[in-house]
Image (tube, rainbow, N blue to C red; front, side):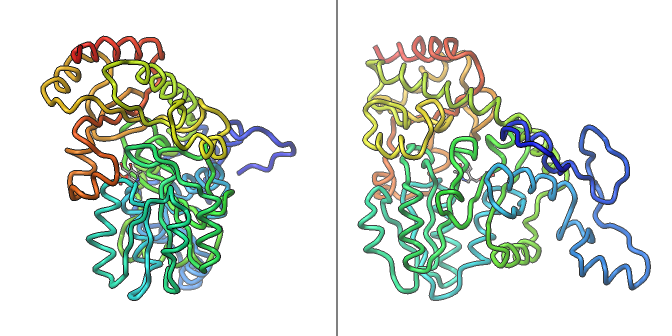
Length: 399
Ligand SMILES: Cc1ncc(COP(=O)(O)O)c(C=O)c1O
């Protein structure tokens, strides 16, 4: 990044991250896409120098579009180094492969994204790692479940799909007291609302597919760390597993991330306003969002977030368990529509029981609070009055 002789706000400085085009004398205003599988080298002196200085060699190892995006993510997360992956799941599983060994103990929050849960149950166990799920709302239980071989504690800041919060600062203390690493998924919150590294997290993962890109047109993920040893270990395993992001997806996310401050603040505000309106609607049994008055984690919400309108653009709510009426509600909506993703500029719905959490067994679904009536909403950037009036008219089917 260009040297600045003054301090500016985060949203301003973000626009200048990652725009150093390595080895290129031209200065295009928009970053080009380096669609090349390799970079050519001269003689053997040049070859060994390029490898020694970790220059650009082969696409799976390094690519300038990933480097630019990594700089922008590190800047936002206030972490030292970032690796860009082919997806959020690629980032999560590659990090498990890189850092966990047979005989280690992994303790994960029970309230997490269904496919992360599946990855722990199906993949991590195959590695000979002992796994354990706990409800991280009970920090004493987490502390009591720590073992001498606990290598990692894993959580989302705000859980998918029930918006259950995790106290990152306290979890970091518990992890570090036991010489374990705290790995945190910031996908629902984004670094605009929370920077887990500043609260003590060792590893932060983002599904860049979501709010970070913001346009529902690319798949990518990231891992941010402060420790160079962790970076090198994860980098090697990413290279060996081939989970690096393609240049085009990296370029798309780099373009999307420039406007994150504008987009996500409106999405978070829309989610809070919609949550408030749904909470007052008689057809709605429960609303899950950190801003609602009935939230049992209000104290933690105040500690984690700078305000009620800056927490997450994600909410979920429970309707009566009547599939026909839920279908009628969905068909009656004009704006929000079903799409199994989140973080885009249009408001979308998803039904965890049939999508993200369909592999989870009944007992754990109950523990996670995922019921027949639960619908997840990803708030877009529509005008909030439009969204609210549309949801309220559609919910009239329950009268
Ligand atoms: C909280 C969370 N983490 C990780 C992922 C995985 O991301 P990706 O779909 O980019 O692999 C998702 C996907 O929905 C998610 O919601």
